[in-house]
Image (cartoon, rainbow, N blue to C red; front, side, top):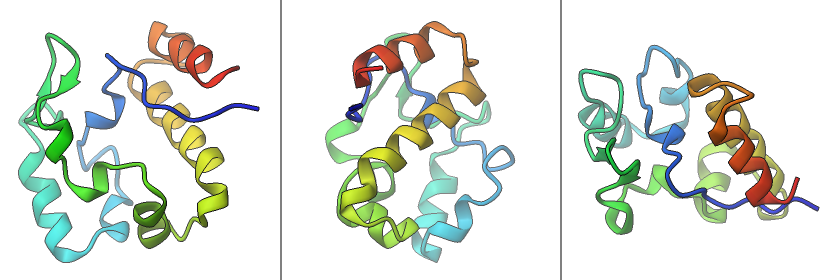
Length: 116
């Protein structure tokens, strides 16, 4: 069984360009949407993403919508806690493939880390 985990030096989820995530506003409160937009840099990446080291500069203090936690995913997406693992894996696969490609090093690393 695959177990979701965040893979270091990936950052696919930090690509926030709202034109490439047209449905994201549906899942956020108006306040979160304002915060989300304030995080998007001119290149579409989060302003707190350290591209050189490929990691979040505010990881411990990142917004709730950046956290893969049962209560966050239940509120935002209606995902029951027992379904979080499979849902998070599917979300990461989709985002990694969209940003880096399905045969990328990031995709291969993710599959290995989750146990595929």
